[in-house]
Structure formats: structure tokens, C-alpha cells
Length: 189
Image 1 (cartoon, rainbow, N blue to C red):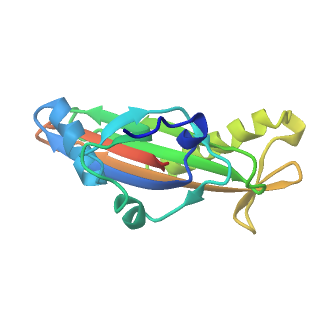
Image 2: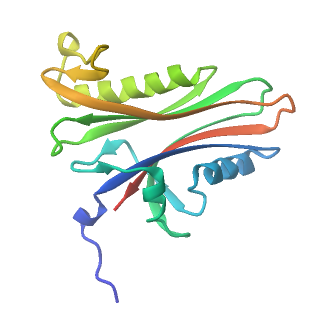
């Protein structure tokens, strides 16, 4: 018999990002096809809130996918947006803000959008994650996060923060089939 896991075992050591789009006459099936497109349909997904764990390492999707087994329970931050309105843009994005100090936790944000370009959707999710991190650091408006155009990074007070996003936007076809856009951060224990 396997020993029970302690709470420390539930802190992710690695994370990867993925995205996908599904289209079908049925909404649920379009969701399933979006998960397949993202490579995470064979998992039993447990949706979790938005903390990027301390000392967690971002790895490529290909590397993370190799660690997964069909039927595995997986903790996932998931953004999903669906519509069957012809020509409607649906977008989903996961934003990520990681503090410079690896012993501190960061933030993941989910953004569910209609009518936004991929760039705007991703930027919004990144900004949201950076502001959530700033608020936990107790920063007020005058010390709010500032984007450094030259260095392409966020500055929060005296800390430099790495941000990124995983975003997908799709247009519902003329036929009005359900279209589901999925973005996800998969936490690996």
C-alpha cells in the first residue's frame, strides 16, 4: 500500500502552458475537442486557483506532456470561452507573473474574452497577473507595476517580474458550430 501524500507533496515543482480550439455542433463536444487540441483531454482535470508556486520551473509543453498518464488527476488553471454566434471572436488566456525571488509565490490569471485580438487578450491576462502580484506585495497606486518598454519586463517597486501568457483566439464559423478556446497551465507535482 502506498503511503499517503503530505501537504508538501501537493506543491507543484514544474508547470507547462498549453492551448487549443475545439469546434462541434454540441457545446460539450467542442470543449472536449479543445482539450484534445491542447493535449490534456485524457486527464481528470481539477481546476485550481491562480498561485504560481515558489521554486516552480516553467517547462516546455512537450517535456511536461511526457510526465502525464491517461486518467491521471491533474491540477490545472483553465480558461475557456465558447460561443456559437457566427463570426464571434472567442479568446482564452492564462497570464503569469513570477517574482525575481524564487522563494516567493507568483500569480496566474485566467481571462475569458469575446471580441479581442490575441495580442490584447494576452496582454490583458499578463497585466492582470502582474497587478495581482503587486497587490499581495502591498503596493499602492504610486508603486503600482510599471511596464519597461526597453527591457520588455514589469517592474514592481524594486523587484523585476517575469511575465508571460498563453493565449488562443478563434472565430466562430459561418455555420454557427460551437467554438471553444482553451488556455491552460498544468501543474506537475
